[in-house]
Amino acid sequence: MCARRTESSGRKARLAKRAAKPEIDPCPPGQAGGAYRPLAEADMRRIYDTALDLLGKLGMGEVPERLRTDLLACDAIDNGNGRVLFPRALVEAAISQAAKTFTLHGRDESRSITVGGNRVHFGTGGAAVQTLDIDSRAYRPATLEDLHNFTRLQDTLANVSWYTRCCVATDVPDIRDLDVNTAYALIKNTTKPTATAFTLAENVAPIVEMLDIAAGGAGEFAKRPFMKAHISPVISPMRYGEDAVDVLCECIKHNIPVSCITAAQAGATAPATLAGFLAQSLAETLASLVMVHAIKPGHPMVFSNWPLVIDLRTGAFSGGSGESAVLNAASAQISNWLDLPSGVACSMTDAKAIDAQYGMEKGLTSLAAALAGGNLIYESSGMTASLLGASFEAFILDDEMHSHTYRILRGIEVSDENLGFDAITEAVLGEGHFLGGAQTLASMERDYFYPALADREQPITWQERGSRDAWDVANAKARDILATHKPTYLTPAQETDIKAKFNILYG
Image (cartoon, rainbow, N blue to C red):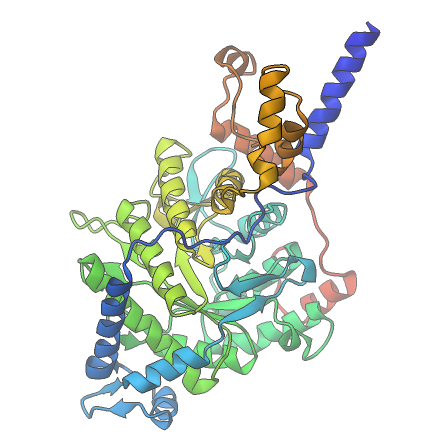
């Protein structure tokens, strides 16, 4: 009995150690990407030259007057037919003076990340209008309560490096209230770097006032901004959107880092050919960069060149396709080639359920973007149904998927110690196996990732434990987190101050 107890307690101790974060994390966020290169150097050069030709000869249309003045002051050219042309020298000046890396701050500085170079980080995005209900497993309109719950949930997930609101609170009809309450949900429930969208420029200053309260006083947010803005100032094909341009100007005024997103659709608002699509999309994202350069050279901007694919038979969005995977990988490759902080969108499954299609599409698209070196991979956590839906279970499963991806990016370290000539000799001449060997024990936690959700048991054991599928396992995990993780990241005084000044509708 004593021997059995000792064996049992020893196994429990090993399982507890394995469940805890290892001393050496085998797959931490921020691994280096760039090994996958779907484009040759000559291909990138031709795409780039075509993009510059588009900007220099066709230019941008519907340029708001305030932006036109700034652009012309930087040597852009008014062609007299309602379009503004960007000479090659202007575009290349904007590229050379752009921020190459910058810190995406968390309110908790230990959660800040560096954007740029070849480091890969998964995060969120999207504006889902539906939530895959955790109880009924049916889609329903997304609510403000959902947004708070999604934010609390992801706060516990190590591989979500930054958090952008993943759903739109459809139960908040007023635009100002929507923007304010979205930002409030983020600062109340996480201290990670965050991101949001501003519907109108006039909503930026009030929200910055709220962020100042969370940061500790007037003007404090701008010193160390912990929320960036998602803005789409370019409308494909090749024209500006006035409201978004106004938001961008206001964000720069308040020192808010920006992610300028181009989201053309192949065969609809951009060419159906993949090379032509990349050329136009690059030109449009460069037009955003030139705009930022004209307003404030070097302001932190994520070069978010997001190729979106539609099924040309039906017009339906196809986020989980192989074409989406290769286009976003190529986009990341080109952005990194230009030494610009890259943002792409992957893991956008078209599946509605947590099923085989879900896993296949998320796995292939997110891995391709990571291998290509996308600095910030948006939409990578929690999204379903071609970005129309967000799922609590998806957040849980995607987080484990990202660990596997980071492990792949980490690669294989080759050293005298790891090659293990002495260990091989010892096993061959000794026990005849490597079980329990010093090298095996040392590498067990350092080199291997042990999933908490994926099932590796024998079929009989799986059946005895209820034959649960991934959806069931993730559902239980999500429920546990939502029941127990209730952070208090705002002090009572901050809560009182914010609620006295703003129409806070939940929390």
